[in-house]
Image 1: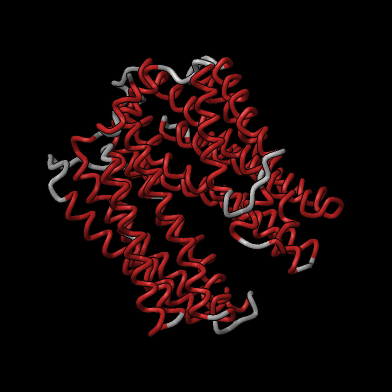
Image 2: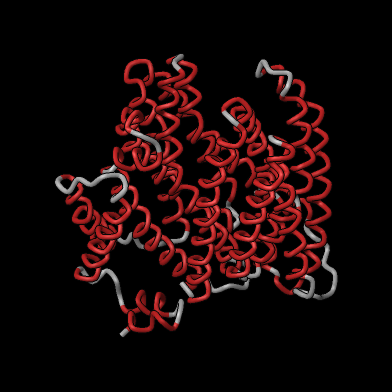
Length: 482
């Protein structure tokens, strides 16, 4: 993995952490300002907005990332055509959302939701430009600037929402999304106005839209996959309190998944650039191998630590009354880690022009998950729901991993996997006798992370090249490579 891609991945990971942190700040504040009733409306409408928003955030934007990475000389021409396509989709989506708002409100037995959903239709339109510029920067491998634009959007969105909520209440909270999207789009336009000036090239519209459509279906499918267990708990067990417990487990288990989403913005354009017809196949295979090794090194210990400290983790974010969610959370951490790894593999095969394979694997998981839920939830309750998602995620991961390694003819890194498992076990073992309060938990994580890295170093899994990559992030880190 090149230094620029590695530093870009780190920058995007930090930016996504900022987005999540601001989200954790925003939700409690909005809840306190609005009160339980309006906050409930906000939560329902936000869920609907998120699903509709995926069509604008992960369709044309991810396609532009791939196509620009393969043809940077015509980047500006591709950008302008993509903006026109996004505008058409945004207008269509806004009109559809506006028209179906009464039907959605009726299905939820609350006619008052109609006006909020119609306002969201306007918000979706005003947000449409921002993701185009984010992924355009990704396609050009300007990852640091992409990270800054992502963080800028999150800050402006939060500031706008908390400023207007006192005046427009629920509408003000959603207006923050529009303000953040517009401000980030304007900044993105300013940063990219002189990039990629060249002769016009006609975009292969059919291939472009095909990739965009398939990628959206993968994204929506995975979003449904990580929500199905909660929906089925609510429908089968018919107990709001139990559903509340499980929602706490689901929310915390998604943290790693959402953090690792940022890495997809590096993987997809990088693989696209390295697998274009004129590229060096050996270089592409080496990049994918390095990426997978680092991802295993990152995902495995994080999931293991969260799983073994689930009770303290729940108390850190919620309270002792949610302790019943601890066991399901331990299982879900494994499941969401598997789905996060699946997402990253899906971006690798999609970047190489095999998005239909990732879509097929996603559909298989969507078939398996509800069948498991019907079999497990009535008997095992929340534990059964957690295993529903985890088993489906592991099946999808194994299938796509086998395909990826065979397609790119990658050697399976058995020694690295063994070293990472050993280091993870050694790092996790102290949690069984070193019990800490929820407030001390972050310090325990830092200490055990140091144990994990030290063990990898002793096992010689952390090599000189790895240390050089880290040292290249900033001059202050030069000592690491010595």
